Image 1: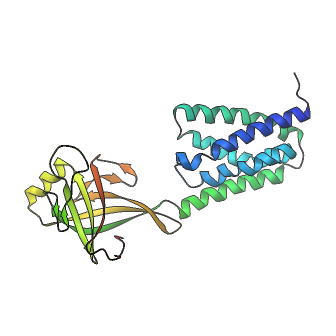
Image 2 (image 1 turned 180 degrees about the vertical axis):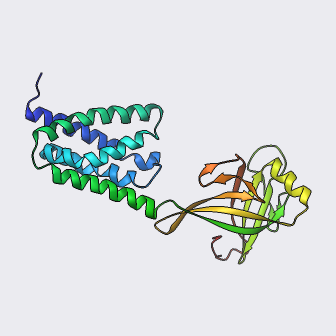
Image 3 (image 1 turned 135 degrees about the vertical axis):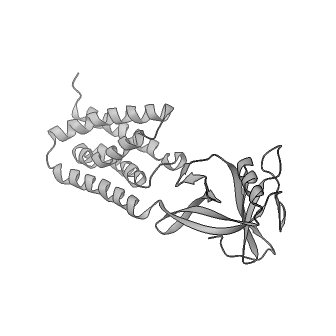
Amino acid sequence: MILKPDSSRILAGTLFTIGAGCLALLPLLGAPSFWYFPCGYALVPLCLVWWRRPSLAAALSVGPLVASAVLVRDSSGAWLATWAAFLLAAVIPVLIELRKGQGWKLPLILSLSFLLASFCTDRLFTNKASIKTFQMDVALDGHAPWGDVGPEWEGGPAPLVLYRRVGTSYCYEAFKSQELRDRLAQEHRNSVTVEYNLFSDFGRERSYNVRSVDGVVLTNGQRVVKDVWQFGGQVLADGAPAPSCW
């Protein structure tokens, strides 16, 4: 059965409206890179164009659909099936409109340029990693200058605590690791070298993790090398505002 133009536009508009609604959930699910966000959210206004000018919307949708196709790589389970089904269904109206439409070359170039600009922005300005190194004091028994650092897990000994003074406050990391505890206990050291990975977007620090403790590598960038239970933070010694740990 051949669909009438109005029926084809309604089906395509409905499909892309549903797809845009699913992409609106992207921040809740998390995306592996920044460039998925502008490309994904570009489909939100484009779903309105699909209801009015499908030929224009088809050309402009190519870039966002390419980004969505790459995102499928990092999905699994129900979301993988949902993304794959949406992309397969979306390709059909795009190809139909590109074949019968005219004047689609410039919108297509703009769409792919938007994709490239988003990708380059991501690589140049987001998820930038740097390494900072500190000498930190050691508390094998969990007893720090501000008091006992209670375990965040049930059972077992008190956590190994590494801390340093920053103004009137303390920045610390606590670990549940017999390997690290035995290593530092054998060396009888009062301080140890700790490396941190700091991640930033557009020059603003976003997150961090512990890269290594006394040469024992725990993470390589965001990839976990040695799975160690840990928690940390900053303790204000006198309640007054204190400089950041970084």
